Image 1: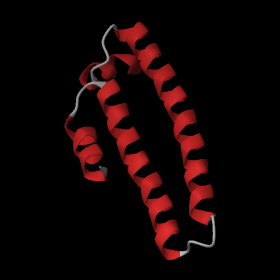
Image 2 (image 1 turned 135 degrees about the vertical axis):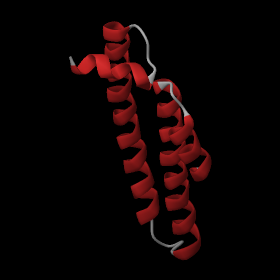
Image 3 (image 1 turned 90 degrees about the vertical axis):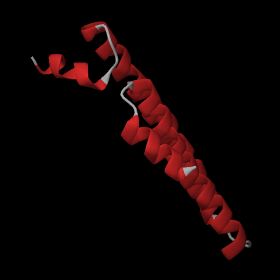
Image 4 (image 1 turned 30 degrees about the vertical axis):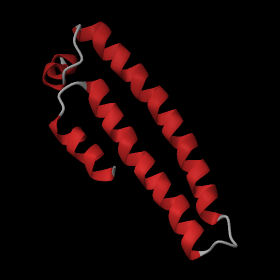
Length: 89
């Protein structure tokens, strides 16, 4: 799942697809936290707390990213990465 997210992040031109790919990467990391906690230290809940914290950070990151994408769409009229150089002007 991690490498599918990295591949999508590198190859996509649409900002929504890049955001979805980034979410795949973060979800893969959170799954690893939970699984490694379960198999390495089943009596502790440290990995589960890191996973919950990661989910909260991911939700906040998604809200901010969607706000930026909406602003870019209103400014440029397109959400392709190559058209974002117009926003620098």
